[in-house]
Length: 318
Image (cartoon, rainbow, N blue to C red; front, side):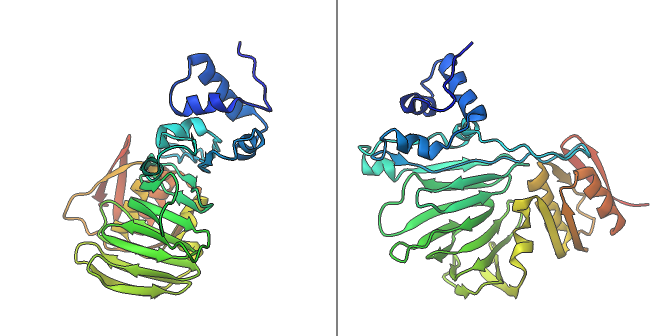
C-alpha cells in the first residue's frame, strides 16, 4: 500500500505526472491525493516556493448526464487526473521558451459532460459537452486570444483594458475587455449565437460585419450566409442555464432543441427527412433524465421517439 502525506505532495512528482513520466505507484499516489486530500492545488505549489513557475490555473468539474436512466446524479470530480487526459499539461517552468509558452492547447469535452477551465489571466470558461476549445498556456503579446472551434461556452473574463480578450469562432470574433457572455456554436447548426450578460462586447462576423452588444442582448449570425440575422433582447440567465444543469427553451424550433439534446446527453437523433421539425418548443428541463425529456416532447408534438442505446429514432405518431 502506498503511504501518502495528505497535506503535502512533492511538486516534482506532480510535474512528472502531468508529463506522463510517473511510475504506476507514483501515479496512484498523485491521484489518491487529488481525490481524498484536503488541499488547495494553487496554494500548495505557492507554499513550496514555486512562485517563479507559471501556474496554469485550470480546475475541472465534470457532471455526467444520464441518457438512459431516470436516475439523475452529480459527480463532482476534482480530478486533475482526468484533466490531464483532456489538456495534457499542468505546470510549466518559467525558463520555457516564449514560443512554447504561447503554444495553443486543445480541449475536447466529452458529450454529456461539462468542464470549467481557469485560464492563466484568472478568466474562467465553462464548456458544454461536445465542445472543442483552444487556448494558450499563457497570454503573451497585446491581446488574449482563444478559439471556440465548436460547441457552447460561458466566459467570465478578467478585466484588463490594456489586453483585450478575443474569442475566435467559425471565422467570426468576439472582442471584450472584461465581461460575461455565452457563445453557442453547435455542430450541425448554421446558427452562431452570442449572448451578453455583463459589460460590453463587439462581435465581428467573417464578412466584416460588426455589432456592439449591450447587456441582455443576443446576436444571431448565419455561419453559412455570413450575416447577422437578429439582435434580440433575452434573459441571459435563461440562455446560459445549461451550465447549472438546466435546458431552457423559449419558442425554439424543435430541430435546434434536438441539436442541444445531442450535445447535452451524448446521443444521436435519426430523423427521416420528410418530418417537420420546425414546431416551436417552450420548455424547461431541470436535471431531467433523457427518457423523461423525450416523453414530455411527445406531449407537445405529433412525433414519437424510440431510443436504442445512443441512437434515437424520430417518427410521426399514428
